[in-house]
Length: 353
Ligand SMILES: Cc1cc2nc3c(=O)[nH]c(=O)nc-3n(C[C@H](O)[C@H](O)[C@H](O)COP(=O)(O)O)c2cc1C
Image 1 (cartoon, rainbow, N blue to C red):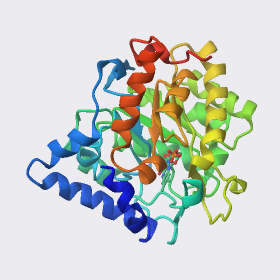
Image 2 (cartoon, rainbow, N blue to C red):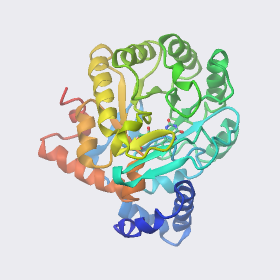
Image 3 (cartoon, helix red, strand yellow):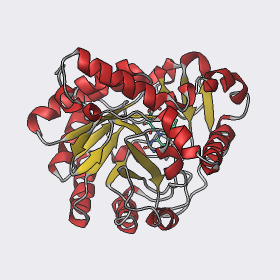
C-alpha cells in the first residue's frame, strides 16, 4: 500500500471532492474482486488484543475510528471496515436531504498536509440513511451516527430537528453524536451553549439508552467550552468528541473557505481536547473522551490517549497517508504501549494527566 504514496501526486491532480468519491468507489470495486477483502484486510488491518477495549457496552477492536464526514450516508460501511478501523462515525446526517454548499467546497493545502472544506452537510437525509443501514445492522464494529441540523431550521426549531433525526435512526446506530460544531452551517455553532445542550441531551437520553456524544469546535473560549461540555455530561451525554475543524485561517498560507483540518489543526485540537479531558475526567469519572483533529501517526494518537482519549478518529490523515494508515498506527501503537509497560490501551488512557 506504499503504492498510495507513489500515486498520490497523480491522484491529487484531480478535484478533491471528485477524488474522494472516486477513491471510495475504487475501494468498493476492489472488494468485489476475488479475495479482494482478504487482500485489503491483510494490508490494512492489524489485530492485537492490547488495542481492544470495552467502552460503554461496545467492543472496539482498536482505538482508531473514522471521523464523521468521510462516509456521510453510510454507503461505504463494509468497504471502509476493510481499512482496519475500530469504529466508523457516519454522517453528518440531517432530517431532510441536503445538497450542501456550492462547489468547489473541498480544498487541499498540501504544504500544510491539511484540507479545508465548506461541504455544508450534503447528505441523503435520515430516512435514506436508515434504510441503507438497516440492511447491515448490527454490524461487526461500532457504527456512530453523527447528527446535524438542516440549514434552514431556526435556532428555536433546532432541538426538534435533531430529535426527529435521532428518532428516525434509533435502530441503526451504536452511538450518536450531536454535531453543533460544523462551521459550514450558518449559526450552528451558536447552539454550543449550556441551555441548548441541556435540552438536547435531556431529550436524547429519554429516547435512547445508547451512548450519546457532543462534538465541539476547537475555536471556543476554553472556559466556555468546559461549561458547555460539563452541562452536556450532566444532562445525559456519555462523552465529548473534540474537535471539529477550525475557522482560524491564520494556520494556512493560502486559505480558501470553510473549516481547516489536518496538520494545521493538530496543536489547536490537542490543546482543546487536553483541557476538556483534564478538567472533566475529575468531575465525571465515567465520561468517555474521543480526540480528533490532526492525528496522522501513532505518536500523535498515543499522546491523545495519554491525555485522556479512549478513542481517536482520523480523516485528513487518511487522505494524505492512504489506506494503510490504520494498520500503521495500530502496529506502532501496540509497540509504544509495550515500551511503556502497559498491557492495554485502557491502562494508558489519561496516563499523562
Ligand atoms: C471534507 C470533510 C468533511 C467533514 N464533514 C464532517 C461532518 O459532516 N460532520 C462532522 O462532525 N465533522 C466533519 N468533518 C470534520 C472531521 O470529522 C474532523 O473532526 C476534522 O476533520 C478533524 O480531523 P482531521 O484533522 O483528522 O481531519 C469533516 C472534515 C472534512 C475534511
